[in-house]
Each structure stands twice: as structure tokens, then as C-alpha cells.
Image (tube, rainbow, N blue to C red):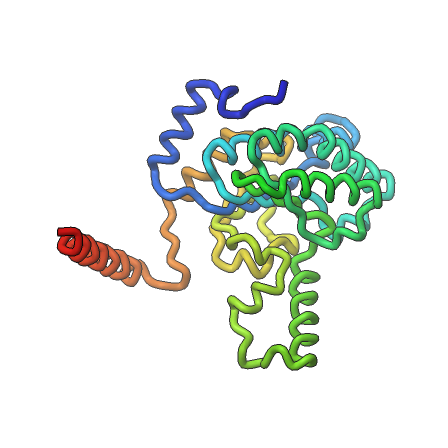
Length: 282
């Protein structure tokens, strides 16, 4: 029987999530740099593969918690282009774990209305992994809940360069003029064009760098760094990140005063709209 995530929640966990939801607007899009699998294994005198295997348990729990909270988008940095430089045996293990994850989890993801996507140079993946990945994406394409995006063979710089190349081709064809290029238009050429920019970027293991992940998209993302290694990261850690996020003021380059003035103006306009609406309905 397929696990329905809402049914499997404890009352205590439901209360924690309810408190978070009452605390303000949660991020629409969470991006996670999952770091620390190797160190986790080393600390326990285990092979690196054990860290990657345990990391999958963290993915499972965070996906479930994000879905239960109504988060719209979750993007996880699963395998970078630079990771191809790792020892061949470790790369083979990672590809095998990816294949196993998709085979074991896709029915449960589908049953819980999760839509699976992937970004990156996907044709670099082994053919059998590509096949299973494409089948999983197709199976969940009509789902309307959490969008889970796996960044695989991904590089932020590569995606930006790829976008510039496509723009150059359109200019050469005469379908685009240089003066037409804006931030918004440029974003349409990126692999992430169908999702909002991340509101919250989480990095585990205490490292303080983006590691070539969503470089364009994370311009105004709130960063949350935790010393927790990814295999130990669970929903309680996600809740801590969300509490921290809810206590921040997102200014997008503006001052606090400008934000307050903007909020006041919006409230005034809302009041005017309600008054006009009440007269119109009479």
C-alpha cells in the first residue's frame, strides 16, 4: 500500500507545521545544497557510499515535509558537473543510487501529487538512468503539488553560458534585438524558466559557498548555513531554517523604510479597492 504522507504525520509534527504556517509566508521555492555525505561516512569509518545512501533518507524526509507544508518548489543539488571528476567507482555508485531512488520512490511521489523535474546536462547521464528519469518525469507531469527538481550534471555557469549562446543564435536569426534583453527575458533561456527564483537557499555541512548552484537565480535568495551534515539533516532542521527565514526582512535592494512605505501604500490601495467594490455591489 502506498504511503499517504498526510495520514502518516504525528500530531506533534502537525502542530509544528501549523505554527510555521501561521508565522508568515513560507518560501515558495527552497533550494538545497546537500553537502557532507563523505564527511559523515568518514566520521564513522564507513565507505563514502554509506554517506550517500544515508543522504537518500534525508531527501525522503525533506520532500515529505515540504509537501506537507505546501511548499511549491524544492530543488536539490544532487550531482554537479564537477562531480564527474570524482573517482569512477564513486560516480558509478552515485548513478546506481539515483536509479534506485527513482525506481523505489516514483510511485509514492506520484501518489502524493509530487511533480518530478530535472535540470542539468542530462544527456551526460548513463542511458539507463536517462530512461528511468524521463519515465519518472513523464509519469508525474500532471501532478499539481510540490515540484521536486533534481539538479543532475548541473552547473550554474554552464546554464548561463548556454543561455547566452541561445540568445546569440536568436539575434543572428533576427528574432531578437540586443535592446530587448532584460533580466526577465534572459531568465526565459535558463533551465529554471518554469519555476520562481529560490526564496531560501539551504547549505549543509557549514560550507559557505554556492558551489556553482543556481548562480543567476539565487541573486536575492536568503542563505541558511547549518553545520549539520546532509545525512543527519531531517525535517526538524528544515523547520529551524524556516523559522530563521520567517524572522528575516527581505528587502531586494531597498531600505527598511521603503518597504514599510510600500506596505502602507499597498494597504491603502487595498482599502480603496474594498470601498469601491462595496459601492459597486449595491
